[in-house]
Every structure is written in structure tokens, then in C-alpha cells.
Length: 415
Image (cartoon, rainbow, N blue to C red):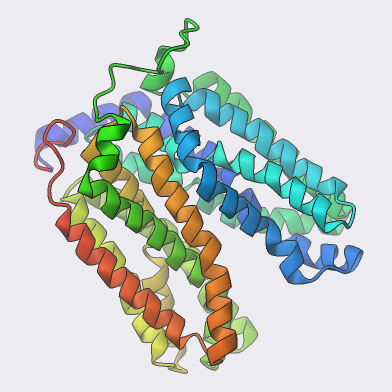
């Protein structure tokens, strides 16, 4: 990054420093169903006699519907602007989360409640927050997007303990309502008053047309025809497949390598810590160097971690190294994909194009837990699953290198 670029990035941050932070705040609501549901599993099993699979089927419903509809939500973002979509999503998602307190013990009732959760989550996906951030940041776009998308890491750190505390103090029904109210009050007012991307400016006067027809970029049809789009579509799907395979199965994998339950959980917890470091580091690096090369490296690092896990080593140090390698790029790969979408296609149809990538990711996320569980049931280990992940990650790294430099009209100088 030359001095002029550095100064420009500083100017962007000086003017819009709050926007990535607010984006992260909004994005944190999207991850509630993933990270806050854990402490509710035991109370729901006890209350209704459900199996764990029945409790967790809500996540499959949410991801499955996301795979079908995220593309259309992206079109909505391009038309209405991210602010309106995001605020609607916060209200729908927190309201739907509170309604989980009304669960009756009927699986049909539980499933329908999760359909509401799914539609709230769709309105809070990454394209909503990153589109606004990308519209205000150019030279510092990579790091700004990374900061915004760290919102899910905040939810991962805060929501399990908060949920467990509320359940212990008030009961599981009250805990659902309490979490919903806390997130609603913490997120909606600041986003209402301060969160605006360029796309939202046209809507200030009540314009009902496209959010900002002056945004540079390819049309949706042009973007869908580009080979780069197919590469990034595969990258989005395979990233989620890898992440949703490793996240729920890491403790069982370490346990089968000889670690005690406590040791496995402790080592696995490193994944969340290094994920934040990796995410911010990746954002910083793609503002300095060619993003497709950074992306290729980001897919190779976890492949190394999976290979180390295949050794079956009983050494805590080796296991920790593997987890750090796996976790360092969780989220970072997705940030790189988002950045590359903005650079290869511009911002005109970013919401729709990114929505398609996120739909592919939702499909990968829906398949991963079922496939990994089935492979373990059939083979008795996770070795085959780890081999599949290594192959997918290496292929992805190679595809990243085929992208080359983005079109000059959407790229930063030197990128």
C-alpha cells in the first residue's frame, strides 16, 4: 500500500469509523440461533422429551430456507438499501427468537417457529452489512468488512454464557424472551440513527426506485455470466461446508484422538479466539496485497490443520496446532470472498450476487452436519471426512489463483 492509499484509508476510517462497528452490531443478531441455542438443548429435552436431533432440527430448517431465498434477499438489498432490510431483519429475528418461548412440545410447532427464525436471519446476512460498508470504504475496504463481520464472533463469545445465566435464573422460556429484548434494544436504536450506506441516501426523500443507480458495477445478468462468479460461488459453498463440519465435530475428533472431555473442549475453544485474530488479519492483508492470493493461502492453512488431525496424535501441543490452523481462517475465507465479489463485480448488483454466494454457503452448511455424522456412523471415524475436506480446500485454493486481478474499474490501485 503506497502512502497515498494509506492516507486515503485513514481518511475513510476517520469519516466512517462507526459504520463497520454498527455493521458488526447488526450482524451479531444473525448468529443468535447458531450460538445461543446450545444452553437450551438440555432444558428442552427435559421439558418435552425431545431428542437432541429434534431440538437442533431448527438449524437445518434455517440453513435450508436460506439456501433457497438468500439470493432474493440480495435483490431486495440492491433495491431498498441495506438499512431498511437490516432493521426489518432485527425486528423479525428478535421477535421470532422471543416466540420460541411459546414452544408447545409439538415438533410441527417448533418447526414453524424456526421458519420465522430463518426469514429473520435471511434479512441479516452478510450482504446487508457489507454492502453498506463497501459503499463507504475503498482503500480500507478489506479491514472494514472484516470488522463488520466480526459481529458473529461477539455473539459466539457472549450469547452462550448469557443464555445459561438467564436459564438458571429465570427458566428457559424467560431466557428466550430476555435474549431477544437485550439484542433488540442494543442493536435497533443505533442502527436506526446512524447506519447508512450510499445505497440508503437515495431513500431519504422516499425514492422508491433502486437504492443508488449511480453505484458502479456489473448488472446481475452480467455478473452471473462471469467465470469468476462460479469460482466465488463454489468458494462460498465449500467454506460453509468446511466450517459447519469442523465447528460441531471438533470436540469429538479431539476426544477420539485421546483427549479427555475437558481437554478437548479447552483445545477446541482456541478455534474461536484465533478466528477473530485471523479474520482481522485477513482484512488487513487484502488491503495490502492481491486478495485472490491471500484467499488461496486462507484455504490452504486449514487443509494443513486437517492433515495434522489425521495423524491421530495424542500430543496436546500437536492437537492445539491443528486447531489453531483450522480456526485461524474460519470466517476469514468468507471475508475474502465478499471482498472479491465487490472488486470483480462492483457494487451495483452486489446484494444479489452476494446473496447467491450466501445461498451456496447455506446449502453447504445444511449438508455438512448430516454428511459428517453419516460418514462417522458408517466408518467409525472422521478420517474420511477430513480427507474430503482437505481435497475441497486444496481445490478451492487452486480456483482462487485462477481469478487473477479484478477489472480495473472496480479495483484499487495495484490490485
